[in-house]
Length: 240
Ligand code: ADE
Image (cartoon, rainbow, N blue to C red; front, side, top):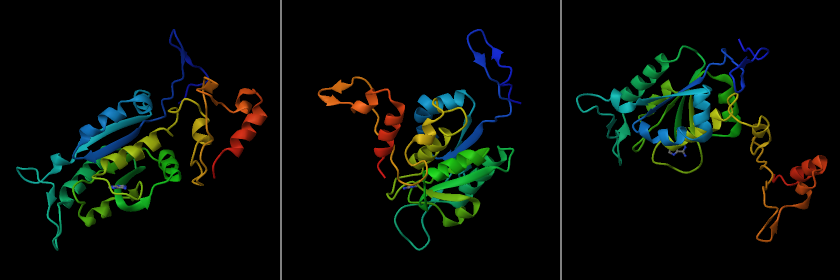
Protein backbone atom coordinates (compact mmCIF):
# COMPACT_ATOMS: atom_id res chain seq x y z
CA UNK A 1 0.00 0.00 0.00
CA UNK A 2 1.20 3.53 -0.71
CA UNK A 3 1.61 5.31 2.61
CA UNK A 4 1.50 8.77 1.03
CA UNK A 5 -0.94 10.04 3.69
CA UNK A 6 1.54 9.29 6.46
CA UNK A 7 5.02 9.85 5.08
CA UNK A 8 7.90 8.55 7.13
CA UNK A 9 10.37 11.14 8.47
CA UNK A 10 13.91 9.92 7.85
CA UNK A 11 15.64 12.82 9.64
CA UNK A 12 16.36 14.67 6.43
CA UNK A 13 13.33 14.26 4.27
CA UNK A 14 9.93 12.67 4.23
CA UNK A 15 9.95 9.36 2.41
CA UNK A 16 6.78 8.20 0.73
CA UNK A 17 6.86 4.43 0.79
CA UNK A 18 4.99 2.73 -1.98
CA UNK A 19 5.24 -1.01 -1.45
CA UNK A 20 2.83 -1.96 -4.23
CA UNK A 21 4.91 -0.42 -7.01
CA UNK A 22 7.09 -3.26 -8.20
CA UNK A 23 10.07 -2.51 -10.40
CA UNK A 24 9.67 -3.29 -14.08
CA UNK A 25 11.99 -6.22 -14.74
CA UNK A 26 13.89 -5.70 -17.98
CA UNK A 27 15.90 -8.68 -19.15
CA UNK A 28 18.31 -8.34 -22.03
CA UNK A 29 19.55 -11.36 -23.96
CA UNK A 30 22.81 -10.56 -25.73
CA UNK A 31 26.21 -11.93 -26.67
CA UNK A 32 27.69 -8.67 -25.35
CA UNK A 33 25.93 -7.84 -22.08
CA UNK A 34 28.86 -5.69 -20.95
CA UNK A 35 28.04 -2.96 -23.48
CA UNK A 36 24.88 -2.02 -21.55
CA UNK A 37 26.40 -1.24 -18.18
CA UNK A 38 28.10 2.11 -18.83
CA UNK A 39 24.91 3.61 -20.21
CA UNK A 40 22.46 2.07 -17.77
CA UNK A 41 24.64 3.05 -14.82
CA UNK A 42 24.46 6.72 -15.75
CA UNK A 43 22.14 9.59 -14.90
CA UNK A 44 18.38 9.09 -15.02
CA UNK A 45 18.39 5.37 -15.77
CA UNK A 46 20.78 4.75 -12.90
CA UNK A 47 18.48 6.77 -10.64
CA UNK A 48 15.51 4.74 -11.85
CA UNK A 49 17.37 1.58 -10.80
CA UNK A 50 18.31 2.87 -7.36
CA UNK A 51 14.72 4.10 -6.87
CA UNK A 52 13.52 0.58 -7.79
CA UNK A 53 11.39 1.75 -10.71
CA UNK A 54 13.26 -0.74 -12.86
CA UNK A 55 15.50 -3.76 -12.43
CA UNK A 56 17.84 -4.98 -15.16
CA UNK A 57 19.00 -8.53 -15.70
CA UNK A 58 21.41 -9.62 -18.41
CA UNK A 59 21.40 -13.03 -20.00
CA UNK A 60 24.48 -14.02 -21.99
CA UNK A 61 23.33 -15.86 -25.09
CA UNK A 62 26.64 -17.74 -25.10
CA UNK A 63 25.54 -19.59 -21.94
CA UNK A 64 22.86 -21.25 -24.08
CA UNK A 65 25.24 -22.15 -26.90
CA UNK A 66 25.45 -25.71 -28.16
CA UNK A 67 28.21 -28.19 -27.35
CA UNK A 68 31.66 -27.77 -25.84
CA UNK A 69 32.26 -24.61 -27.86
CA UNK A 70 28.89 -23.10 -26.95
CA UNK A 71 28.06 -22.49 -30.54
CA UNK A 72 25.33 -19.92 -31.22
CA UNK A 73 25.57 -19.40 -35.00
CA UNK A 74 25.59 -21.33 -38.24
CA UNK A 75 25.62 -20.78 -42.01
CA UNK A 76 22.36 -19.95 -43.82
CA UNK A 77 20.47 -22.62 -45.75
CA UNK A 78 20.53 -21.74 -49.43
CA UNK A 79 23.90 -20.05 -49.09
CA UNK A 80 24.77 -16.42 -48.51
CA UNK A 81 27.23 -14.29 -46.62
CA UNK A 82 27.74 -14.38 -42.91
CA UNK A 83 26.35 -16.43 -40.09
CA UNK A 84 22.90 -16.63 -38.54
CA UNK A 85 22.03 -17.08 -34.88
CA UNK A 86 20.72 -20.57 -34.38
CA UNK A 87 17.19 -20.99 -33.01
CA UNK A 88 17.96 -23.33 -30.09
CA UNK A 89 20.15 -20.96 -28.00
CA UNK A 90 17.83 -18.00 -28.66
CA UNK A 91 14.68 -19.88 -27.69
CA UNK A 92 16.30 -21.49 -24.61
CA UNK A 93 17.45 -18.03 -23.45
CA UNK A 94 13.95 -16.59 -23.96
CA UNK A 95 12.41 -19.48 -22.03
CA UNK A 96 14.88 -19.00 -19.18
CA UNK A 97 14.12 -15.26 -19.07
CA UNK A 98 10.36 -15.93 -18.95
CA UNK A 99 10.82 -18.18 -15.95
CA UNK A 100 12.47 -15.31 -14.07
CA UNK A 101 9.28 -13.24 -14.04
CA UNK A 102 6.24 -14.14 -12.01
CA UNK A 103 3.67 -12.34 -14.16
CA UNK A 104 1.80 -12.69 -17.46
CA UNK A 105 2.35 -9.02 -18.21
CA UNK A 106 5.66 -9.62 -19.97
CA UNK A 107 6.51 -8.92 -23.58
CA UNK A 108 9.32 -10.36 -25.66
CA UNK A 109 10.79 -7.87 -28.06
CA UNK A 110 13.10 -8.48 -30.98
CA UNK A 111 14.85 -5.42 -32.42
CA UNK A 112 15.17 -5.97 -36.18
CA UNK A 113 15.15 -3.81 -39.32
CA UNK A 114 12.25 -6.07 -40.42
CA UNK A 115 10.11 -4.86 -37.50
CA UNK A 116 7.45 -2.18 -37.10
CA UNK A 117 8.82 1.36 -36.84
CA UNK A 118 9.10 2.33 -33.17
CA UNK A 119 7.29 5.47 -32.06
CA UNK A 120 6.60 7.40 -28.87
CA UNK A 121 3.15 5.78 -28.61
CA UNK A 122 4.90 2.38 -28.40
CA UNK A 123 7.08 3.59 -25.54
CA UNK A 124 3.97 4.91 -23.74
CA UNK A 125 2.11 1.65 -24.29
CA UNK A 126 4.99 -0.57 -23.11
CA UNK A 127 5.76 1.62 -20.08
CA UNK A 128 2.10 1.62 -19.06
CA UNK A 129 1.09 -2.01 -19.18
CA UNK A 130 3.99 -4.30 -18.36
CA UNK A 131 5.67 -5.91 -15.34
CA UNK A 132 8.50 -7.18 -17.47
CA UNK A 133 10.23 -6.85 -20.78
CA UNK A 134 12.57 -9.33 -22.44
CA UNK A 135 14.67 -7.91 -25.27
CA UNK A 136 16.52 -10.32 -27.53
CA UNK A 137 19.53 -8.77 -29.28
CA UNK A 138 20.51 -10.42 -32.56
CA UNK A 139 24.07 -10.22 -33.92
CA UNK A 140 25.99 -11.37 -36.95
CA UNK A 141 23.98 -11.32 -40.19
CA UNK A 142 20.71 -12.11 -38.47
CA UNK A 143 18.80 -14.97 -36.87
CA UNK A 144 16.84 -18.03 -37.90
CA UNK A 145 13.38 -16.69 -38.78
CA UNK A 146 11.61 -19.41 -36.77
CA UNK A 147 12.58 -17.52 -33.60
CA UNK A 148 9.82 -14.98 -34.24
CA UNK A 149 7.33 -17.59 -33.01
CA UNK A 150 8.67 -16.93 -29.50
CA UNK A 151 8.55 -13.13 -29.85
CA UNK A 152 5.65 -10.73 -29.22
CA UNK A 153 6.87 -7.69 -31.12
CA UNK A 154 9.52 -7.04 -33.76
CA UNK A 155 10.69 -3.45 -33.55
CA UNK A 156 12.71 -1.33 -35.98
CA UNK A 157 14.12 1.88 -34.46
CA UNK A 158 14.79 3.61 -37.79
CA UNK A 159 15.35 2.97 -41.45
CA UNK A 160 19.03 2.11 -41.30
CA UNK A 161 20.88 -1.09 -40.45
CA UNK A 162 23.02 -1.50 -37.32
CA UNK A 163 25.44 -4.31 -36.52
CA UNK A 164 23.31 -5.77 -33.76
CA UNK A 165 20.33 -5.37 -31.45
CA UNK A 166 22.22 -3.79 -28.54
CA UNK A 167 21.86 -0.14 -29.57
CA UNK A 168 18.17 -0.56 -30.51
CA UNK A 169 17.64 -2.30 -27.15
CA UNK A 170 19.16 0.69 -25.34
CA UNK A 171 16.97 3.10 -27.32
CA UNK A 172 13.86 1.12 -26.43
CA UNK A 173 14.86 0.76 -22.75
CA UNK A 174 15.66 4.47 -22.39
CA UNK A 175 12.39 5.57 -23.95
CA UNK A 176 10.40 3.30 -21.62
CA UNK A 177 12.24 3.73 -18.33
CA UNK A 178 11.99 7.53 -18.37
CA UNK A 179 8.19 7.14 -18.47
CA UNK A 180 7.95 4.84 -15.43
CA UNK A 181 6.33 6.37 -12.34
CA UNK A 182 8.69 8.59 -10.37
CA UNK A 183 11.59 8.58 -12.84
CA UNK A 184 11.33 12.02 -14.45
CA UNK A 185 12.00 14.95 -12.14
CA UNK A 186 9.47 17.40 -13.55
CA UNK A 187 6.13 15.62 -13.72
CA UNK A 188 5.07 17.66 -16.76
CA UNK A 189 8.17 17.22 -18.86
CA UNK A 190 7.09 13.90 -20.39
CA UNK A 191 3.75 15.41 -21.32
CA UNK A 192 4.94 18.51 -23.11
CA UNK A 193 7.92 17.17 -24.95
CA UNK A 194 8.39 16.24 -28.55
CA UNK A 195 6.52 13.40 -30.26
CA UNK A 196 4.24 12.80 -27.29
CA UNK A 197 1.27 12.27 -29.60
CA UNK A 198 3.20 10.78 -32.55
CA UNK A 199 2.10 13.85 -34.53
CA UNK A 200 5.57 15.02 -35.46
CA UNK A 201 5.18 18.11 -33.28
CA UNK A 202 8.59 19.14 -32.04
CA UNK A 203 9.10 20.63 -28.60
CA UNK A 204 9.49 24.40 -28.49
CA UNK A 205 13.04 25.77 -28.26
CA UNK A 206 14.34 26.54 -24.76
CA UNK A 207 16.99 28.88 -23.38
CA UNK A 208 18.86 29.36 -20.12
CA UNK A 209 21.20 32.08 -18.76
CA UNK A 210 22.85 34.24 -20.02
CA UNK A 211 20.13 36.26 -21.75
CA UNK A 212 22.73 37.52 -24.21
CA UNK A 213 25.33 35.03 -25.41
CA UNK A 214 27.84 36.53 -27.84
CA UNK A 215 25.15 38.83 -29.18
CA UNK A 216 22.55 36.04 -29.52
CA UNK A 217 19.59 37.15 -27.43
CA UNK A 218 16.93 35.06 -25.72
CA UNK A 219 13.48 36.00 -27.13
CA UNK A 220 12.17 38.97 -25.12
CA UNK A 221 8.85 37.31 -24.30
CA UNK A 222 10.60 34.55 -22.31
CA UNK A 223 12.11 37.18 -20.01
CA UNK A 224 8.77 38.91 -19.45
CA UNK A 225 7.48 36.68 -16.65
CA UNK A 226 4.07 36.83 -18.37
CA UNK A 227 2.93 33.18 -18.31
CA UNK A 228 0.13 33.48 -20.85
CA UNK A 229 2.40 35.21 -23.36
CA UNK A 230 5.16 32.64 -22.74
CA UNK A 231 2.67 29.80 -23.33
CA UNK A 232 1.46 31.51 -26.51
CA UNK A 233 5.02 31.92 -27.78
CA UNK A 234 5.80 28.27 -27.03
CA UNK A 235 2.71 27.08 -28.86
CA UNK A 236 3.60 29.21 -31.89
CA UNK A 237 7.14 27.91 -31.88
CA UNK A 238 6.39 24.21 -31.92
CA UNK A 239 7.36 23.00 -35.37
CA UNK A 240 4.63 20.81 -36.81
N1 ADE B 1 19.11 -4.18 -35.97
C1 ADE B 1 19.87 -3.65 -36.94
N2 ADE B 1 19.36 -2.50 -37.37
C2 ADE B 1 18.21 -2.27 -36.65
C3 ADE B 1 17.24 -1.25 -36.65
N3 ADE B 1 17.30 -0.20 -37.46
N4 ADE B 1 16.22 -1.36 -35.78
C4 ADE B 1 16.14 -2.43 -34.96
N5 ADE B 1 17.02 -3.41 -34.93
C5 ADE B 1 18.06 -3.36 -35.77
